[in-house]
Image (cartoon, rainbow, N blue to C red; front, side):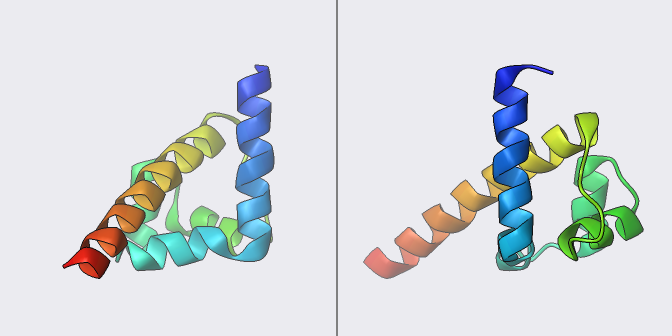
Length: 85
């Protein structure tokens, strides 16, 4: 595992513990099933991640972090657009 991947996992797991990952998914209007498909995991796996019952690991954890980063940026952009309109 690279240092960059390890740091991404630290940030991802912190976001899970605060509920941020679920808030990002909900703000992006994605279901658990849709988010799970984007990460390449079963919806029950994603649910357990969001509930803090399991920790994401390996390539699926990195995929989850990537999807969340993209969604976070999209949600922020949409919020800023609405505020300036």
